[in-house]
Length: 346
Image (cartoon, rainbow, N blue to C red; front, top):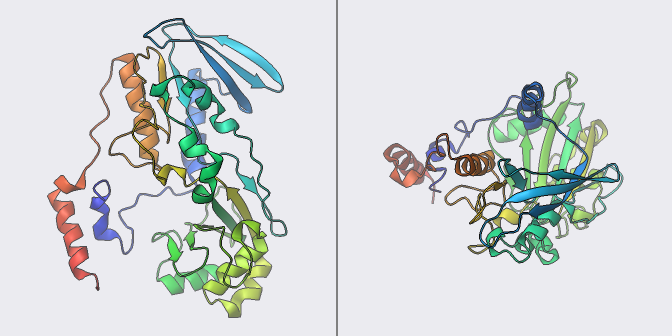
């Protein structure tokens, strides 16, 4: 609440939330890659870092090499003491499995996303505890099933706009709080991707409790095809008159995501490592599984701040990250939130 108190005054229409005109990959990642490549950055895709080695020392942590696997071959890279190594310790999208309109997603556990973190944390208390976030016992609480719908018709976007009094790309998530799966929907600003055909719309959603039985489709969400998930959503919205038309014009792709909710599960101090572990001379840890006091996991801001702080500490130059915004000290935000609370029905 303190971190985002300044948004409370616009919660009804979400006008204070900044959005990208297109999907975040094409708005952030692709332009960054195009800018960095001519500056000498070498991107290796389909590459798995297997291990990191450290120079012998009782008190200092200095990376002196790492091994990576690509196309079945393992390559060793030497790291000089003055080099900087930044490691992402895990991914909320780890072990995702897509399905189709006619097939439910099939879980494909590999554990590769956090294997390196496990090796780093073995015998080192300053590197956190990946089992807290990626242990198999956490999956029932961290699992979501998401789904993306591509629709060549206009029935759905017109009906949802009329229902919510909000055109595509405006407003926040629409949560069907009484649905068994607790479904949330987001209708993107169109087009969502470059080259999207005119008249085609893309929207997205997820189920917070995919292990429950649906209210209309009597199956667990994580066992449903895309067609079954779409039918459940449309019946929850009472779009029965438009159901056949929307089903005929839509492709719904479900995705099993076993760890996407794990950043919000209970964890203790020390389970996430700091951006620069104690004694590190050239290793920084970045991403969603780094302890950033007062910052909010899941946000781009959290990932950026972890990298900024790691670079600032390791290179010892440039400005430190600014303090994390705290709304309890912002009179304007407090006044705006108070107006919202006083005007809300009991």
